[in-house]
Length: 258
Image 1: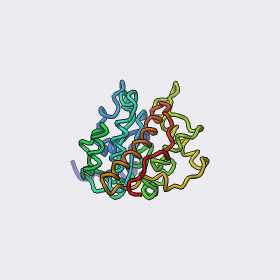
Image 2: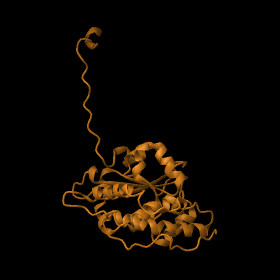
Image 3: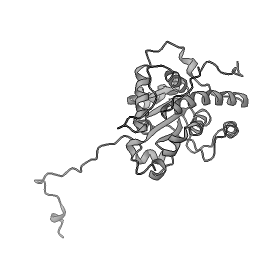
Image 4: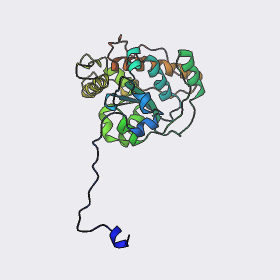
């Protein structure tokens, strides 16, 4: 074929490929990030990506606090939600190095609680991750600011872990119950939206009291795990549509570092 026949005719307008509209849920890239394939994410009778809820925990190095929260959330997820696999839990770090193992004291504490620390690998947080998440929960305020700096559009679905657990105790924030036409993931997104709406209406509390400090000893790791367990249990139970027994976050054991 001569060269002139291969060249496009400038008089003929180019056809632009049609782009499919972006659907909420877990993208292929996000599934690769969390180590999940399509079958592992939704297996409830042909469940599609729109009915998946992405929950991400964030700390600094993704070695202790956020891995604790991730694996405790999996442990405490009610059986009904775990069976349907609509809730996908993962974690990342604002300054993490990819591929690092969990902090050994944190792994030992998870094992003693009945959670599974196996197979964990650290990940550095990216804007693409945050864009796919339905809820991002950070260990402290610095990380919350870093998440919002990466993805400003995520400001209304990014909270400190303790802050979100405290908001769930507000009587106007509904539990994640699905209506006749809504799936559990959509109901959980409704809980997040209501929590964001009431964030400025609940009684003021010193923001630092919602933070979970980075542990620096074996005893501090145990205390950190207790804080995480108390808050994360409230969160995953509420997102799953079960009315939890509300326990004030202030009734905690004494911090061994104080």
